[in-house]
Length: 190
Length: 311
Image (cartoon, rainbow over all chains, first blue to last red; front, top):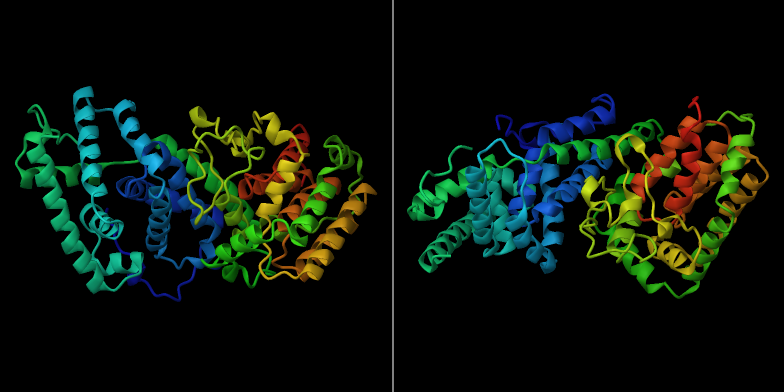
């Protein structure tokens, strides 16, 4: 998580063309450096676990095809933006949401954690996703990028393509909604 | 990661603590290793194409092709023109393309002497006109193009289409599109292998993009591709490649890019450059996983697998 610098820091002219060696090398670096981020982002934006694999792959294939158009240092901004679009498309399919519930319930990925811890972790993530799904999509994106990916408002603004002020106001509303939903579910004892 | 509570459930935490706990768990969430590996494979095969592509300069307007709105336009055009001359013309073209028995191009390729040095111009196969692919994936996949599709767990995003290397346990849905580890051109459903039939042609018609193509230019496109086709039939790969280059020079955003790409695989194979043909085939299958021509290309490239690849 140390390289949170988005392209905002780099000179925009530093275009990849010709300066980066083989595209294949850069494409692989793209995956190695950003796969976890993209995958996690997709998950928190509501992509079911069963689909996250394919969705992440799509994000990176788009990235690979557009390699020449992604300025150096701007990779994450691009990939996150692509991930937002992929997730948004998937979210529209409500049937997948149903599948998500089942996949969380029935999944058993091999893990170094103890079965109890792993189960607890999965329950927590499912609960978190339930909270996130109560938000508007706009708010959810901002919330995930700010609170989970811990990006700064200007970075998020660049990814989502809205002014920084909008990021701030959406985040405020998202936090409020998150807290309220948490309170509600707890009171409900879900 | 070891933050899970020793108490009965995280749910018993006070609200503030619970919120912080959930966020910590979420931040530590990581992708399965296998998923990363599959993506590396997929990206590798796409990048392979791009690697060659970046060496050819003929693609000035590529980025405009990829801009967000073009696929919408293309989709609209494809949907609206399905029954018009456009659809008919494309269908003709496709029928022309698929009417030859699948075995024959392979034998052409093997018997043809490598007389013409092949220019490694991959542009046609690899300029993935993203608008094209977008349309292909935006439309519900034709039943014949993909295997008996349950609500396809794969093809998720119309807006960002891409070939997908699937987890082995989930190959059933769109198996033909999958490029397995090490480029095994493994099990293909009979539906996907079948190069003929109305569903296949209609599917291609839906895939064909045609940003701003007039009828006459489409006819012209078909004419060129017919020349390619007949050159291949006469075992004249050099002429076929020349015609394909002409096609791309004249129609950098042509409606029949996918067909041209498939023909190029055959032409290159026929010219004797089997290694390049195989790479092109792989790139084709990655770029157009749902194309009915994929079966033909795949069958074609399989011929080269046993071949000593000799660039």
